[in-house]
Every structure is written in C-alpha cells, then in structure tokens.
Length: 127
Figure 1 (cartoon, rainbow, N blue to C red):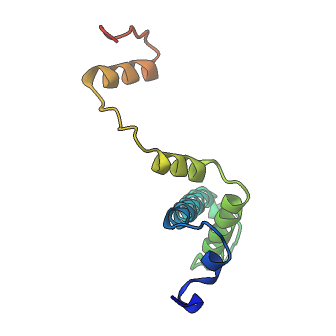
Figure 2 (tube, rainbow, N blue to C red):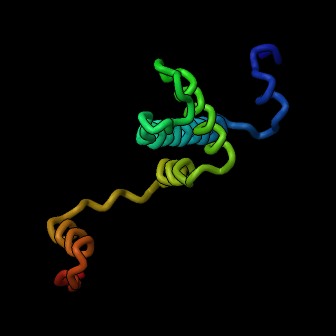
C-alpha cells in the first residue's frame, strides 16, 4: 500500500481509526445543525420587527437578501462561539451506546402533563 492512497490527516496521526473520523463527522454535523437552528431563530425574530415604524435592520431591502445573509452568518458565528448547547447535546445523544431508550408509558405521559400544569404528582405504583 502506497502512502499516496492514505489521506494526509490520517497519515500523520498514529492510531487514527475510522471511529475517530465518525466522531469528528458527528460533531461537525451537530455544529451545522445548531448553526442552522440559530439562523432560523434569528430570521423569525427579525421578522417580528415592525417595518411600518421604520423598524427592521435593513430598511428598503424588499427582497430580504441582506437580512437573510445577516441571519446566516450570525447563526454560524454564534454556533462557532459556543452556541446554546444544542450541538453538544446532539453529540451526547448520538454517542450514547448500550442504553436503550426507555419507552414512554401512559403513566409517564400523565405525570409530565401534571407537572406542566402545576398539579402534585405521586409516584406510580411499583416505581
């Protein structure tokens, strides 16, 4: 096997495996997801500004091109600067192995709705 068939980052890193590459890819995708989420959140927030009162960040931009680019780049910057924790939560969730998700039962759903409404919740029998 020639060294030309191995990529440069893998060649210089002893002990690199396919799993290392998969973890890096998961982190990249989670970061992209967080950046996209933040961009969409910023877009929705910006659209609430009243243009009739002179509000808005880019008055006169009828196509909303400047606002869209602003949202995109600010979302990417925020995600790159640490974000809101969405990317790290996604990575943790995707890396958990061996722990099968607990099925939601009727009593679990009832307890969650009771907590949301402020009612007292008692422990289900046997649990």
